[in-house]
Amino acid sequence: MKSSEEIKFEAKLDAGVLELKGRLTVREISAALELIGKKLAGYKDKSINIDLDGLDYIDSTAVVALRDLEDKYRDVTPVVRIVASDEKIRKQFEVFGPELDKPPAADIEKTSFFERLGASVFDLFNEHIAGYLQLAADITYWSFTDTFRQGNRRKGEYVNQAVLIGVNAVLIVGAMSFIIGLVLALQSAAQLRSFGANIYIVDLTVIAMMSEMGPLITAIMVAGRSGSSIAAEIATMKVTSETDALRTMGLNPVRFVIVPKMHAALTTLPFLTIIADIMGIAGGMIIGATALGISPQVFIHRMEEAVVMKDIVFGIIKSLVFAYIIVTTGSYFGFRVQRGAEGVGKVTTMAVVVAISLVIVADSVMGLIFYN
Amino acid sequence: MAGNEIIKVDRLTARIDNQLILSDVSFHASAGDVTVILGSSGSGKTTLLKHLLGLYPSDKNAISVLGKNPWHLPQNEEKAFYSRLGVLYQNGALLNSLTVGENLALPLQQHTDIKGGLIEKAVRLKLQMVNMQEAYNKYPSQLSGGMLKRAALARAIIMDPQVLFCDEPGAGLDPVSLSALDELILHLQKLLGMTVVMVTHEVPSIMRTADKIVFLRNGKLTFEGTVREGIESGNTYVREFFDRAKGN
Ligand SMILES: Nc1ncnc2c1ncn2[C@@H]1O[C@H](COP(=O)(O)OP(=O)(O)O)[C@@H](O)[C@H]1O
Ligand SMILES: [Mg+2]
Image (cartoon, rainbow over all chains, first blue to last red; front, side, top):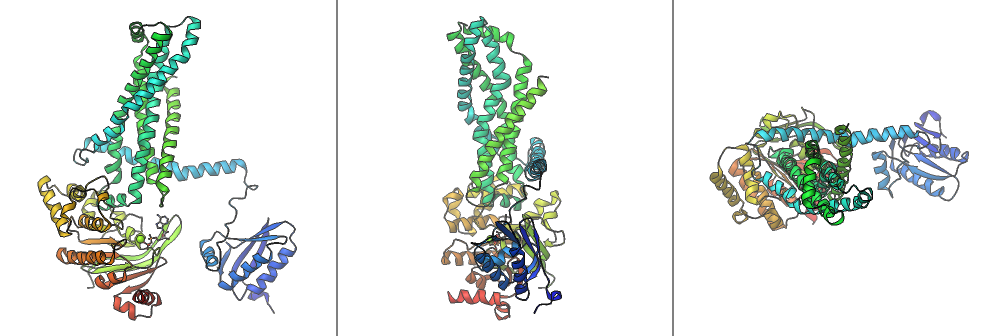
């Protein structure tokens, strides 16, 4: 005996989803089951989701009844799946059995590709870019301020970081640049010889190294070494509450931890880049002497003509931008660490990948700007 | 002790990632008292503490610690404010890159203009108070759990704070070390005249130290009062909490 005004419950069928609305308790359940049964009987598709998100309240009996319904329709058509994303309702269900499925995310047919693209760009902006810009602004502000304010510095930390980021990278950056210079020249040697343009090996090596390869190799090596360690250090500090501890001692983690790294990176990367330039050119010089018959004296003489101040300055400017990108990206991902054991490793990897990608993008953008 | 409300929380509601973690929590802590925040794990104790410390955003009127809401402090008041608080974090949270001595010296260097020799004396005195003189030159990673807690406690009291916050000081300690740590905290509290806000679910610890308990359950406050009032009250959660502990 049900009278419809007692039933504060509704079921609406739409596109493969049966939405339940209102209250579903021991009082409504038998009427509700009858209603649901009718809807399912008229349903032609293979499967149907019963979505509980519209429910205001569900009690334990209703949970049991819905579980039972799901079981009954497991091997018949339509197959019934009960889904909910609402945390309260999910909790109710978990008390009485396994976790519920979440309703399928956005309905793919309904949104166009461009809508989805727009949404994901929006998400990207919301999730990453806004946060990154905020942190970058903070780091920039304090890096400037603390350059001129002696008192607030953490003693010895700048030197410490300069050694870690700069000095300790000299060997690897030098070696890699030397090899790249060598290979670059070797690859070009055959072509140049066939044109009889041997002497241009000098221009080629010098310009390529100074304006492009030197800064890029340096940045990629430093991003791999220091970008990752910056992210790991900050992430670890966050996970172990060290950043909280700094804050509650009245210390700003950005100033205390990141600013010395920024200062160190900004001052050492130009030098590393110059070392990379020199080593790469040395590699070219060796190929010039061995494969193209250009003696080092001739090479250096020609170099004096080939080198343009602009290329050197451009390379240095690039290295400063790269230093900024590496430190801010490492810091950003460090601060984004989630709780749990895999968190630190994950953000460390992300930091390196994103830093190197941004370095390459910035490199091409700057290339376009400077040489136009 | 009415009127001495050093900490006031008024209808604090907190969300992290859109998930409701604290809902409508109100209580106060009086000067000189040990107020214990308790509740099972995941009930929101640490989150509440972090709000009190200004590590998470809160409505301006929802929190008052020493008369201020730390989240809304102007930047030029931060140092002065935080120098009046000491915090003992759950895992110590000493800076791993510094020695214990350097860790303790840090707040002194930041908040005062006292110089090297005196800083070292002050640091050594605090280490002595927690019986850890030998740790001065050690790194946190070289200390055992109990030693780490004591060193972190020494850092927390380095500025003789008015309020000491402790997040589960007992976690990971054996009962003997735990009771020693409790004694130490109480001793220091008397010595330095501190107000203590302690998160814990160690019943012996609560019995030993609490002037007042604040009981959280699923992010809601279910009881505020003395331990005795709690046990005698009709609040089933509080009763159950203490009964179960007695059974063990
Ligand atoms: N940073 C965070 N991100 C997501 N959830 C969190 C975060 N911090 C706490 N929570 C959640 O908030 C609830 C309370 O956590 P917490 O305050 O640490 O509890 P307690 O300290 O009482 O054990 C838990 O459900 C926890 O999962
Ligand atoms: Mg906790």
